[in-house]
Length: 441
Image (cartoon, rainbow, N blue to C red; front, side, top):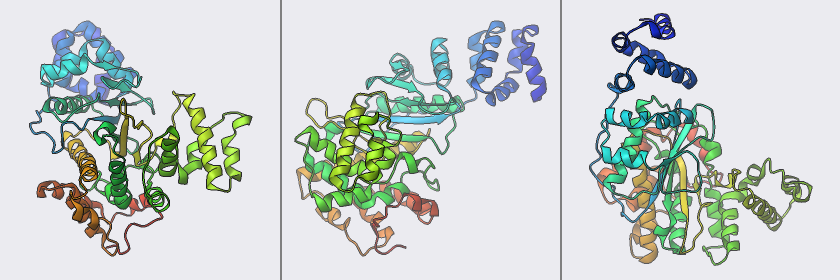
């Protein structure tokens, strides 16, 4: 059937038998693929009034790519806990909610051959509201009507946890999810892995501050450039980091004020106008007005402090401090609840292999940071080479990969990524004014 014939068929669905509907499901599926969710849902409701729901779902999803079991753990410690936020378009939150409410989600998972133990833990442990709940799969939406994101619970480097991610990727691809310049993949790492070791935070900052441009270039699959929205949602902070070490030299988290100053210096200092834009706190706390006339860094920090105190009263409002390449805004740094550190540079992906490569990159950065903090001899030479100045960008890439990885096959993954985009002009949008490299290729 052509599109007009399919449309007519669906509009008069009550005139056809179940077998006639099943016979024409391939045309119906292709027609539904391009419809907005509201129309798609109404047609689905009409279909299941005439034909068995299980048969309809089977025909809709039988030809989709099936679940492929992930069989190898990642090359970083199991005790490093992490979480992901995967953003997509063309699958609105209402569609996911509808699939849960009608119990279609389990049937679809079965058709996609997701192992029952994996699908059960996802379906039985899901919610649709973000409540700082990190033990559930959270389906939510923050942007356009047709977009949604899924946040994982706290996961570990186990095959069972990795295969939950594979299952979600399989589901979203079967639902025809798409990615665009506004969809990102955020990787959160539990700060408890760093054991409240301030030297480990310093190491992490030094690695990032020295190689931020490189991280942008190796963050995505070969040939794929950084998403457009990264300019706003993952702002480079290398210049802040380098200024921090030049002025202060060390990280200290003894008080809440220490943490506030740290966030100001690392994530807000050079972007205060963007951070506080639209902060209508009232005439007694007009931070935008006061920022225009602030002259000293002390005055600007006082404005940040006032902004920060006000935002704590408004937990449901978005704090744009977090919109940086690496984000410490969720870190609490205490033994009971140290919080998390978020890496925001990655484009969204529904390919498990790409997601796990990115997890590996982040995991190894954290692993090296804490190991060297506890034993300064650990990779001492590799660390020192990272700060060589009269080098090419390729030298810098090799030095970074030698610091992070021991296996040649892991280095090769990210070297190939860099090679494929190293000359792309678009990456100039993400370079700090404080240049890392004195001699570029």
